[in-house]
Image (cartoon, rainbow, N blue to C red):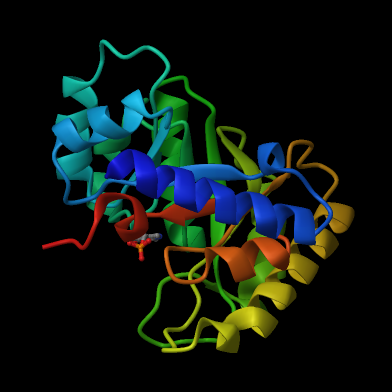
Length: 229
Ligand SMILES: *Cc1c(COP(=O)(O)O)cnc(C)c1O
């Protein structure tokens, strides 16, 4: 069951890592547990998973409080954060993948300043200018990165990407490759971000391609937990 699924995914991650000259250990698996109850998180925990991705703050905070007795469990925020809900972030997330605008970054920085926390974050990139999608557009990317230097309570750890939907995930190989190039360029150019080392891309249907093209963090939900209701 879930153990078999996790083994199967891990095996695929391993093969994709080797194809790109890396090892399984170089790739971090975020198990996307949104919409699934805490019991399912505990199941996955028993099979060795430690990092869980949530996309809604209300739901996430309940689960995180519930699982406080698991000291080595970590949660990542992967969904859009509304500015009026920033206060719900607290110290709940070891990484926020979805910093998707300068405005949000400004507000988050003020919030984390007020609670004396330095928060690890990723910049979500809207690489192909999909109008309905969150994320920083390529034209705005440099301005965003320049401004991020001033936000002392946000530690920029890397980039996050959600590709356009295609039936055939191969259609996104080129976009993953472009994201890897942007990630490498950004690391070179903005040396101020000393721990800029995470490229989060790849979900259930396309994680192997994303890893082959350079992802070092994948966010996998349905392939682990089953279809969401
Ligand atoms: C839901 C979600 C995922 C996981 O998607 P699956 O197709 O179930 O693997 C990954 N990333 C983000 C941002 C999501 O919202």
